Length: 390
Image 1 (cartoon, one colour):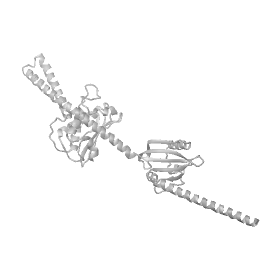
Image 2: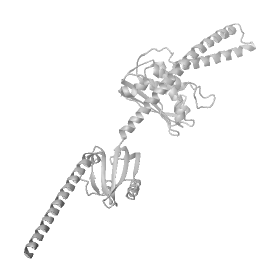
Image 3: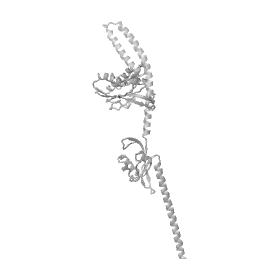
Image 4: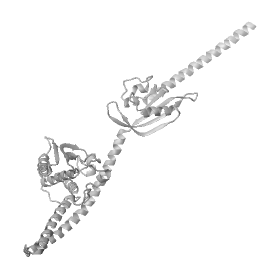
């Protein structure tokens, strides 16, 4: 009986061990299956995610992570993150240590320099992960490339700003046009009466000099009115095929004869398209731009003039109310004092000037704006304080 009891006990123990082994094997298979599922989940998640241990060695990473960082041809598991990214910013390494201390870090937008020299905008998150004993085993990194979103936001702001500017200038143009026409009529009345008085006045008469001064002031006021009408799109145009390179060189030659302290540089496209334009009006536009550049360089400097062909799409031209197609670009860049953002917003407003009294009417760039708009074109200004203007 005793021998039988021992055999029975041994059999029970063997059965128990077999069950334990089977349970352990099953648990192991379940763990392996879960690890495989977790690995597949991480690998195929559409986000850029990576999991590292406390030595910053990769445990798992998504395919998107590898693609976003140009690492699709490498197996990163077991490799150190700092060996993969040798030029990682010191700030990011500090954040990794903060994460190992239990802190989660979220950066909504941040500049990320690529190995090829390009720059992307990214959104980053760092979160610690814990082992079963509660200790921090490493960190999980999440990044989202938001460069396209940033570009879209910038484009939206540009379109909204240009649309606002176009609406503002349209309103000012209507007002300026009405005032200019009425003011011009008043000037013509004064001019007529002054001319009649001069006809009846001898040159020796003490009033003769004063009357001629009045006539000179009338002529100056008439010239201002013409500029204001140009801004308000009220001028008469004789449009014909024109070569902008020739107009640029002719106007620059006329300007350069009297402005020896300024040096002109040209980069003109030999294959520049012909444009439909009123040549005297285009010469006025160019001369106003040259004069404006010269006035921004009181101690002399350089003016760079460039022409080129552009094909612009509907999205870019939407704020200007223009049709997509072929355009000719003329840029005039100076090495002057530049403008701040506040000045830039008003640079084409009539009568706005930053020059001291007597040096400008504030109508030069305003007339450029009006003439270009009436030629189914547009004008933009780019500048930074101390870095000149274009």
